[in-house]
Image 1 (tube, rainbow, N blue to C red):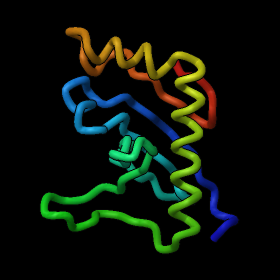
Image 2: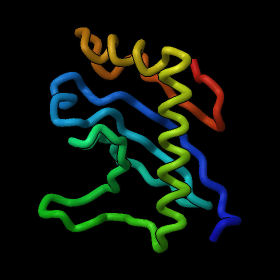
Image 3: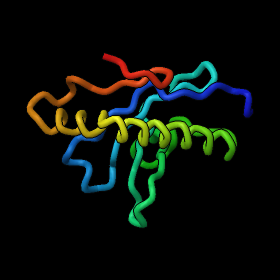
Length: 117
């Protein structure tokens, strides 16, 4: 499955009220020809970053990768995008916007690695 294209469409910081629980951002990715929305980037209690896949209440997964290799490639793409946005200041700018009264406006989107207006 290494020939399947994976790209991050959007990476949006979590609301300030959820950051204390370790939630850092939400991601939308393309895996092949399938769009997956609702991935969550979390900081673990050990301080590492992890990507959680969308679940229903009660823990039943909505979508998950079929192989460990696909999981690793998706996680690497999301975490690389997070690092890129942090270096560019995009995540910090969005975090400030999210904490203001304008929650939801001015989100930072990434399509194929380019900054979107």
